[in-house]
Image (cartoon, rainbow, N blue to C red; front, side, top):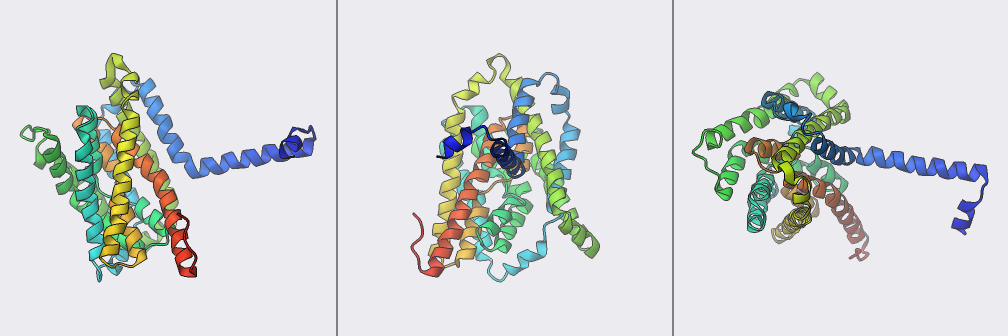
Amino acid sequence: MEMAWISQPAVPGNHFIVVLVGSRWVSLLKRQWFMICLVSVLGLGWIWHTALESFAESTALRYIIVATVLFLMALPLDAQMMWRSVRRPLAPLVGSGLNFILVPLLAWSVSRFFNREMSVGLMVAAAAPCTLASASVWTRRAEGNDSVSMMITILTNMACFVVTPMLVLQTTGLESNTESLSFSRLATKLGLLVVCPMVLAQLLRRSQAVASWATEKKKILGVFAQFGLLAIVTMGAVRAATYAGEGGVSQYLGVLPWLFLAVLGIHLLTFFAGLATTKWLGMPDQDRIAVAIGGSQKTLMVGLHLSIELGVSVFPMILYHLTQLVVDTWLADWWRERTKKQKTGQPPHP
């Protein structure tokens, strides 16, 4: 009946269908614009890599973009929220341990199945800290304790200037005795580009006027930060295309599906390990989901910057980010419904 009705030439009905379809597309663009742009700039960066080479090779510009984006992402964060979880520090400590221990271990176990460029890129993604905003957003979506996810974010990002280069150098066999790959050089850069902008943002938030403004303008600050992320993704795509040479994109087609399965497996195993560990420790459900999400998510900006800095593939970091965006949406909704079913005494959906 529905198909027969749609095929009728009645103008009002057809107009309604066009409006309905159009509104759905607008709704999709509003919700998924960043993912659409992310895939688009990957393609554009690859196709126009020759024209964009000078842009991609500008180290100073990349440093400015990275520091600015991390400042914009940290400015709306209410660090005072984390003090709610200080009375029960076990949850954020477990989440940070998952993020900096379990994820790198899982990545290291599968990295040997990929070529050198992808293998090191995967370890860079695994060694990146937790996301600055997404972990708390998805935790709230799952009706979890976002003060725990906030604490995981702060702990991992503040420690990343030491932990991240140490993990990458120790697990990849990169020569750390050269000047460009020395631990001290990488740690200093991450400290200046990641930690300092976050600290500056939080110092500015001590002003009530700045804190109120940043909270009010949280969405627009996030949009500007995402445009900066897209610029860094473009740089990574241009470099990948340049390094690929005559082989072009075809040399990546065979490995990308396996890389996707690897990052999906790492993310899911860490997520459910977080749920299992926190259940064994007797934590409340709100803390359990916060640990699972915060422990398994990785920030795109730090991973992209370090991948470009080391001259390795950005695809593992981008795939990990896209995977967590999609999968964690489903997982957060599943957990929220499960919790509601348990409260009402109904069996949750499998």
